[in-house]
Length: 142
Image 1 (cartoon, rainbow, N blue to C red):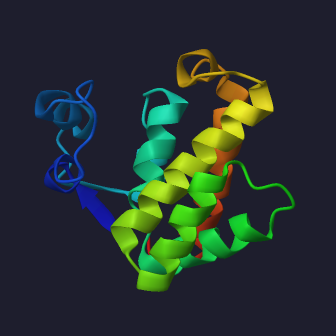
Image 2: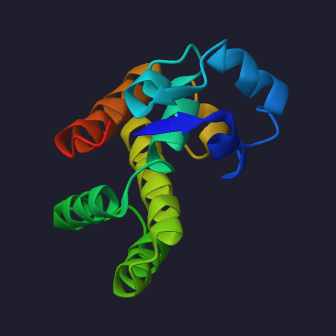
């Protein structure tokens, strides 16, 4: 699976990523694989966001199953939103819930109160990238 600048802009990314910046990251390439996007020279938290929002339905369902099997759920509203997204097989909602789940996991891991504090914990974010890479590579959709 490859991703174009238009694919990313359709998500849409935060204001830190206007079209010009995304085009510069792609360079002269028409598209990037999801693995290449996870390797871009941008903050790890932003690569995790992109990775979550590029999961296929099967990958998102597998991630959701795995997250639910973890002994400690990060936050009750995330768990409720996950159940609703699963019941509806809503890919956009699943991607968002998985992103929020990973963010909460990072916040818990670094014992931070907000994303600003956690955003600089590169090792914890890199660990989450490895998890996303597992789902992407296992599905062989790249």
